[in-house]
Each structure stands twice: as structure tokens, then as C-alpha cells.
Length: 94
Length: 415
Ligand SMILES: Cc1cc2nc3c(=O)[nH]c(=O)nc-3n(C[C@H](O)[C@H](O)[C@H](O)COP(=O)(O)OP(=O)(O)OC[C@H]3O[C@@H](n4cnc5c(N)ncnc54)[C@H](O)[C@@H]3O)c2cc1C
Ligand SMILES: [Zn+2]
Image (cartoon, rainbow over all chains, first blue to last red):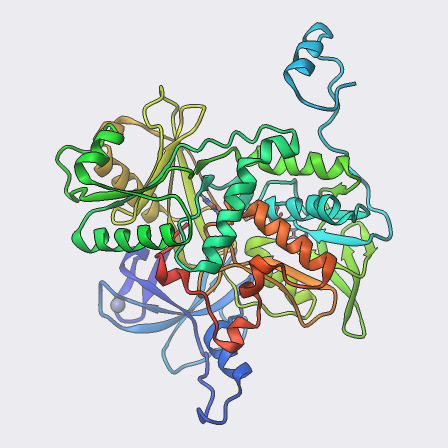
């Protein structure tokens, strides 16, 4: 079970949150210039790593804010939490 | 020496102090070259190897499993078999699979304990009932058995349901030919039959990399060294995107943990399978007497085969809401498997951009029921280079063309 340290509310139990999937996915554009491959990539293809993953979480039953989490998909250890719009270097959390 | 299983062989071995039984399959060491390699010793990989030999006469085949066969999702699932899908492509495919299951014990000479005890989906509100009605109509149009019953009839047919539930039971959809089978027996039965036809079952051998020459696969690099073949099929469930990436192939798959539980064993009390989407659980009773129950996916990526506690609690609450008498039972075991989830909840059985490399994945939470058909169709693709007619809509190209077969929303398929 995850203990997630919301940047706005502090540590709360996993059940208060919802995971919104991979962070930093860029929508291709302009829309009429993007190829079918680019659209498929944007819509359906994710990194799905076995190891550190950058993902968005929503504090649904709390402040209602989105933020980013770096989490290991094998150990589930959370190594970094940072706000929307921010980026961190690969492996920066660990 | 006893090779075929029958009442007669049981009797004979009884007189022979059980000395003549042979190991069910040969534990093989890899050769340097094969006509085809199948990666992954779950049900889909084993069935693929068997049908390569049986249907296509390709017997010089290596089945490579990094752990022990059936140790992945095949040995971790709740074994529900059904074909209550919505779209013709999926309905036909899963119905073909149920039909193969119906003859499988005989075909493999191995008792897979397929018990067609029915599979119920319950509706707890008016909208749920409308969805069941729609589902029943789709099934009947697809030529699949379906029975819709009102709440009173459901109670009559499934004893023990809550008399005074918080979520009223307004109706239920039964697929009488649905049911469950023994998961290990499916893996072992296919392994035994494939081995008898000449397939090498190689366990404790992990595929680390692929040998690629001029855009064509030429073999795999394993923990036991290089093994060459110009045709490689992959059926590794939750690890699909990780393994395919070594071949330079990307897959639209995300890996999530799905967990299941068994209670302590009790006398027979539930003779069918009950799925209740509203309470978030489904259950059946195994031949050993344990209640087998499952939950929903943990909705964040995971390669850890354990599953989270909130779902455990929710599944238990759902069971107690449905069957108050089960509130006294204790969980005996809990575990999880890593499921290969695709956007439309329709499988992928496809060639790839790498020549000679074929994939079978995207089963999500519901690929046990598909093992015979999944193996049949991957073997067909590997042997002929063409998609089997039943799997034509299951290609990777659908994510580019947009021709998704959206069972995720059409039948709200959870498992
Ligand atoms: C808890 C749970 C309940 C489920 N309930 C149901 C159900 O009721 N009905 C249903 O139809 N389906 C159900 N499923 C889904 C079903 O179990 C799977 O879809 C199905 O078993 C997938 O079979 P498979 O052969 O593709 O994968 P697996 O059985 O997982 O086999 C894949 C194999 O590949 C091996 N492998 C991975 N990487 C490598 C490598 N690099 N080299 C060599 N080998 C490798 C693994 O060790 C594994 O043995 C459930 C799943 C879970 C987890
Ligand atoms: Zn918060």
C-alpha cells in the first residue's frame, strides 16, 4: 500500500488518490500535420518501464490537485514528487 | 511404462505399485537451432507450441520459459471461462476457445477439469439490467448461449444470496456453458502433449535479447546461450513490452497487477460462477472447497506480483454483501499476476515490424479463457505468416488505423 506525500497536503493513504498514467506525454501538432503513427504513439503507446516511472497522480479525496511522482514499478518505492509543469532528471529521485 | 492416461492405466499402475508412471513432459536442454521458438511457458505459449506441432507439423520447436511453466498468470488466475463478448470478432474468437476447451481433456488426454457450471453477471440497478439485456441480445445474435433471469429467479438458482442487500439484485445474465477449469492442468496438459510431439520444453531459461539480421529475427540470446531460429513467437503477458523492446518492437501495452484470493476450504456451497460488477468482485468455489475470489486491477503500473490492500478489502466487502454467510470465512492465500492491458481490451495476435517475430498479448485480466484459441492463432501466424481468420482484427495495425475493437466499453469487460 502506498503512502503518497501530496505536495499540498502531506502524506496520505493511497486510497485518496488516483493515478493518471505516464507524465510528460506531448500531444503532437499541429493536428493536421501529425501522422497516423504520431497519433497512435500519443494515444496508445506508453513506456511501461520495469523500473522508475514518471506518472501523474490526482489527490482526488483531498485538495483535488495534480502532481508528478517518480515511482519504481517493481518495488513501488516513491523516489520523487514534483509539481505539474516541472521536470526532473532521469534517476534524480533515486 | 505408462504413457496414456485412462481408467485402464490407473488400474494397471495400481497393480504395479505406481512404478510405471513417466514424467509428463521431457525437461529439455536447448539445442542450437530450431524451426520455431516460442518465448513464454504460460498457457498461450504452451498452446502455441502444441498447435505448431499438431496443426502444422512443425515439431522442431523450443518453448522457452524463464521460470517454471504455468508460473505466470496462467497459474495465478481465477480460471473463469466464458464467451459473453459484444462484437462479432471477439465473440467468435472466444466462442471458438470455449469450444476447444470443451474437447480439450480428450484432445490432450489430460483432465483439465473443465466444469461448465454457468457464469452469472448480476445487475443491481436499472441501468445494469439494461446493459445485461443488451449483452444477452448481442450474445444471442452472435450464436452464444445466454439466459436473462429476473431477481427472483436468480435467488432461486443461486442459493445463499443476501436476503436484505444494500445493492438489490434485480436480475442476472447466465452463460450456462461458461465455468472454470484447472489452471495448472491446462499448462501441464499442453506441455505434455507438445513434448510428446517433439517440442522441447526448456524451463529456467530467460530470453535476454534477440538476434536480428537485416530486419529479420534470427534467434534469441538466453541465459543458456544463443538459440537460433528464423521464426519466433512471444507470449509473455505482463512482460510483453519489456521483452519486445529487446527486439526493437514497441507495444501499446501497460502492465498492471491483478490480485485474487482463496478462502479456507468449506463444504460445497456455491455451484456456479458469480460476477457482480457493482460490488467489484466475483467468486466461485474450487473442487478443494475454497472460495476463489477476484478483484479489479490496481490502477498504477506494477511488475510486483502482490496487489494492494484496498482492493483486498473491497473484494471481501463485496463477497459479504452478496453472501452474508461467507463473512465468517478467512482468507487463506492472496497473490497477484501482472496483466498486459491494451486500450480496447481486445487481444493482440500479430506479426510485427521485425520479420519472423510474432506476438500474442493484450489479454489483460481475461486471457485464461482464450488459451486454446490464442495458441491456435499464434501458431497459425508463425506457420503461415498470415493472420488466422479469427484473429484478423487483432493486429497491431489497428492502433494506427483506429479500427479498435472496443470491448473495454462495449461489454465492460473486466476479466
Ligand atoms: C489474479 C488473476 C485472475 C485472473 N482471472 C482470470 C479469469 O478468471 N479468466 C480468464 O480468462 N483470465 C483470467 N486472468 C488472466 C489470465 O490469467 C491471463 O490472461 C493468461 O493466463 C495469460 O496467459 P499467458 O500464457 O499469456 O501468460 P503467463 O501465464 O503469464 O505466461 C507468460 C510466461 O512468460 C514468461 N516470461 C516472461 N518473460 C520471459 C523471458 N524474458 N524469457 C522467458 N520467459 C519469460 C513468464 O515467466 C511466464 O511464465 C487472470 C489473471 C490474474 C493475474
Ligand atoms: Zn493534496
